[in-house]
Image 1 (cartoon, helix red, strand yellow):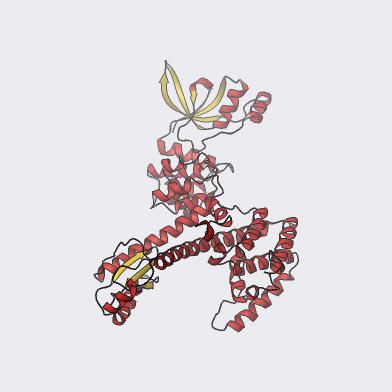
Image 2: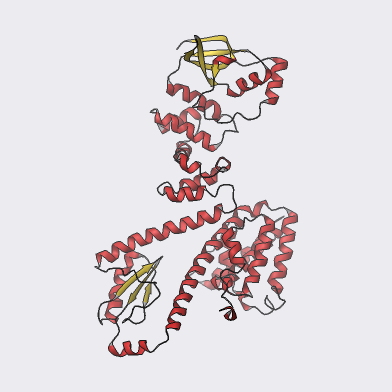
Length: 471
């Protein structure tokens, strides 16, 4: 491999299109240093092409130094000229840039992918860069995020490594990946991620359930609404468990409902089975109010929506508190504890807190919520003896409160756990109960919680029933 050092005019040096670093950043200070002391380290370049009779060279190592020299008005710079094949050239750039802390995860990932495309193996990439093979595989997963997905938001480059990993979860669902990428730089990232994960679980369940239904020879009726009973049929029975267990459940249900052929419907994660009516039942059903039927269908749809919303936001809140609780400073802890203590003791109207609300003493739910909020869960998880479970975990809570410097943080987690145990799907549809959620969210927002647009809608009453007078 031929190596030589020559002075080359900066006009004959061109940036490398495959350089992992896409932005050399601010080189003002480096330019000032070069003006005063000269360039102390030569660039590494490789021959590129001829232009107007002049030989052009492609920069391999030293893009920042070249930019600084141009800013400083330096006309010629010393360069190590090397004849390199494409793979060696990329290896040199990746290794050199990996040693710098300001290379973004996405830039590093694209660098690995470029070498993989040239035939390098994962083990070789790990050895060259001093990384583990699992690290390299993680970066390659990020590199597979398509260009059209990256273009979904101007803030895509600001995504953290953690967010890029979350985005890569949807590699097999490019539509979902693009949807999540569009949330880059907004407060709705966590909301959208949770929503998409939930959608994937539902779609997987539906796919497996359809296979079970097909195996039983059952045809799914689309129906105007899953909750609307077809004419000529009576009440429904519901199934929301695992698809592979449905066959046994359906056999038992069919024994109890032998009259006629059933109607099968399913939506989200619920299967409904309607048995046919007898002539007497048909006459009785025809006499019932259609309005009651519509109201029941609307109630079931609203209830399902509230349950899914409550499940999703519960996960968002507890995940966020667990990740950030150790970073709250003393002032934040004192302010939040004061607010939540008053909320726990007096509620929002001096009559719906501990003084009159027995639900605050729902210890099992409080302990369950604490386990989701705390970085280190409580040690006892054996539910076979609930008395021992409560006694052991309460003793551990008291011990943690007396750990040096931990009292305020433990108080915050316990107060949050109490309120998490109180908030249920019905909270979002009750004018009185929702005030507790509003006060709780106000405290979380002060701590830095990114309240999504969907959560704000719920807090502003989107699930509250309409006033009868308005109808």
